[in-house]
Length: 88
Image (tube, rainbow, N blue to C red; front, side):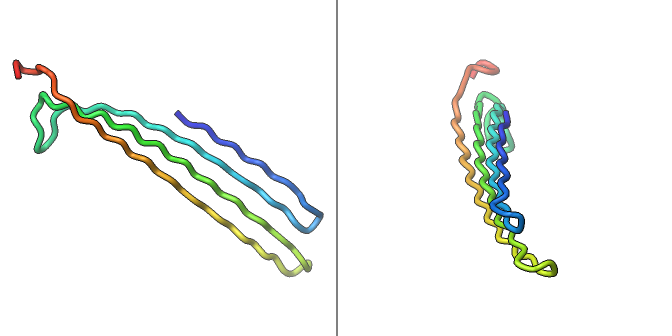
């Protein structure tokens, strides 16, 4: 699942601003693993939030100032549970 938003705004003919937000979520389930029994089930959820913003200014025709900021936040949750796979 994915959602995003972008807003652009011209503050003046020589100054512009943009903001971007992106949200992604991923769910997965796996059984067993290298060091885990096949009766062990791992449920994982990853949520990612990304924020970006930029301010661009052109004070002269030959000059450009560009300020960019990016922040990424990730939250990974894992829960393990056992079932009766293989008679366990």
